[in-house]
Length: 297
Image 1 (cartoon, one colour):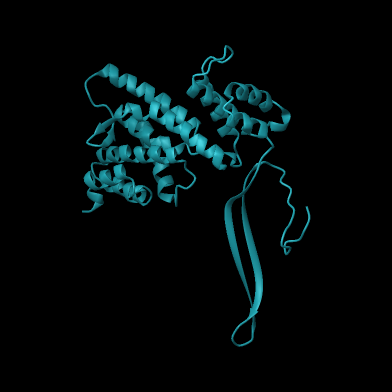
Image 2 (tube, rainbow, N blue to C red):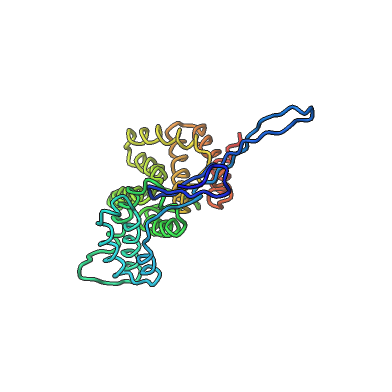
């Protein structure tokens, strides 16, 4: 809006909310040792350098005060206003209000199940968030805690401990097995709806599908997710809970791939890649070393 690219400061107007990266490039000339003028350029990039949001300080204050019922009702009114049609923030605060009610055990005759409502509101916010509002620390840390509870109650609770490593139930109780599968299916769908990186849950899903002999779906998932994983450079955009879900899925899936392929080749490719990210995690490190001998011959 004012200032030139060469000024020390410029005024910028953002037409859309979101988290913006910035790249600064500087061209300059200099004389080399022979006195000949040369040109060069340096640049630097900062991810999520500035976040642009609407002013919703009232909702933030209600959340800070833990006035969750009032927060739910206020956020519900705000989110339907035309001004916020493309802004996920009111839905984020709506989810925070519902979840706060669940944690505190607060009741309201107009709200049947705050826990389920928190899932719905979070999923809506995720779907609307095209520009990284959930990358703001206060929202990302809350999302991580919410994902942690969802994954604990809907995913990890249905896995068994096999010598310290995650595994599916392999007993003879068919009713228990059926119930576990149905609840995990629901849990996976829920988790995918509340994550900015839903692919992480597909690694658990693929292994589960193989466990119930749905080989077609298993192969379809791996055909998409293995190349994606091998091309990933880092997992910085994942929440801490996303990382745990992915790590668990990889540990389940590599065992699955060993059985499917009757060798460890593909499993070791994946484990060696994942070791760069999870090598410091005790569970993964022990699994990699003890079950796969660190993929050494």
